[in-house]
Length: 153
DNA sequence: GCCAACGTTGGC
DNA sequence: GCCAACGTTGGC
Image (cartoon, rainbow, N blue to C red):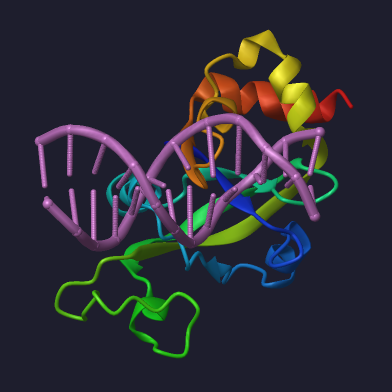
């Protein structure tokens, strides 16, 4: 079992939106960063747990837990000329971008970014170290610590 | 809305 | 293959 953190702008797609989709979940399309893609394509497995993070908003932080319900497959938006995520260099034969499906697992009391930054047990967390990455692995220890922080709030 | 950080692109 | 220019992310 691996643990992950995914960022989403709540104005665009929030934890409530994910909850509303139920067990089917959502295809995590639109990732256009190679490091993030590689994590999804090569390392994400069925049942992996995901910290759901709200970025670029007033209340940034971890707000829930999701689960990987489908492993990597080509992101269809790369083939759609009308999509914001269209990539003319991608083809069906050689897709460039991949996505997984995730589904709502449970909500958490929000753990703010500032609290995570202040927690020395979370030193080395990629969210802090590699702040521009939108899909990243989280160690089991860090995952448990963030959930504990939520429950202590 | 500003700006720092940093990934990507393209000329050479 | 280097690196400057550029575009994007994302916190504040």
